[in-house]
Length: 305
Image (tube, rainbow, N blue to C red; front, side):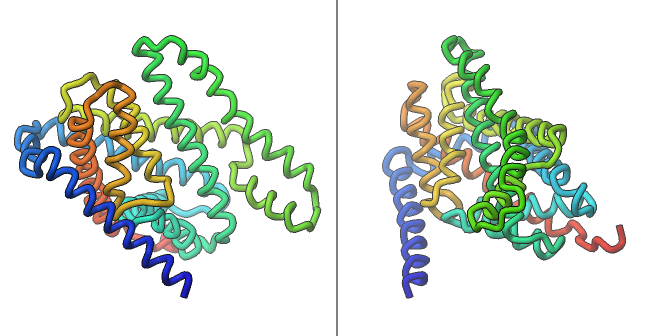
């Protein structure tokens, strides 16, 4: 009963966030005015931005393939399918419920343990968050905020310590059967075993977020009369909001609020940021639906490979 009430409450919150966003846009800008710039968006430029976004899906799938294939095997196309469908459900379903698709698909196609998949996913999310914040600091450092060069340089170190920490924890827990020791081993085993493979995971993650930020900032900048760099904190804040447990349907509501709040730090007007956020979100949703539909056409028969 409590579980059912919790689900109903989450959907109610998601619907209220969607309705609140619809009212906010209508009151501050007007839907017709908000969508009008799309008529003038250069088709060639739009195609390039879709391609950049598609490449970010590809590098994320390569990260998954590099992480799992040495142990589980399987063709790259299967990892690509899993990655795209997981991202599609994550972008469409509220309250992070789409995350459950990843361990389920890994169990179905590779018989991977749920605990192992969840541990892998947790570390991938940690890496994503760290690189996203690091890229944001780097962009502003390159645009003249000199004091950010220190966190940019220092920020390289912590991710490099995670994989050696894995070896230390595994050695320290040894063969202990204590529940906490077993859980800790499962958790750290979510990191790649070799340092070289771990470095490749970082490189794939860096490439993924560089491509995504380049595409998303470029889309948002079309709707705002401001330098592209001024949109970086808003886009980063919006992407981080997708990791929050409270979300609207398809992320509508939390994404826009986060982008407006993050962009205000760069002195961009709230109305302009709202227009950029909603239109960027519509672009992301369109790409999500397109790539998700294409992923369904990827064959999944592993036995013939």
